[in-house]
Image 1: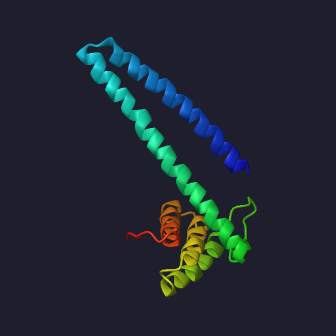
Image 2: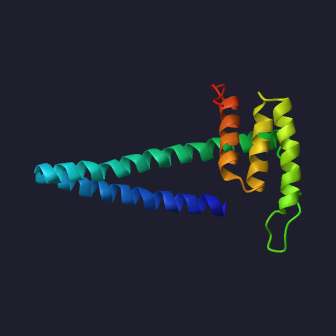
Length: 150
């Protein structure tokens, strides 16, 4: 829950920044000279890109949460029983072993969103965030019947 609150606060702060930057961009455009209009348009690009990125990230998190809730209702969430170091981090060898098991499951059932969700969790536990995100995106696409890339 703490992560959701942090995300919400940061998203709100980012939205305030978008409004402030957009206001500055519009003010520059309002000056009417070629230089200020060009600069104002370039300032407006950043909030637009940022808003798009924030929307995509929020949608991804929401979809992943929904898949987690559905998998939990089915009793299929992976159990967090991995060994931990003294600092509380997941032991690398334990994460690698769980990852190997999850990868084999995904290769055996490539069209099952559930195994891709569990593989995403295994990637995260192995501290491979980019692959965890791609695996989760695949799980979301499979769940919603959308085409899967790669």
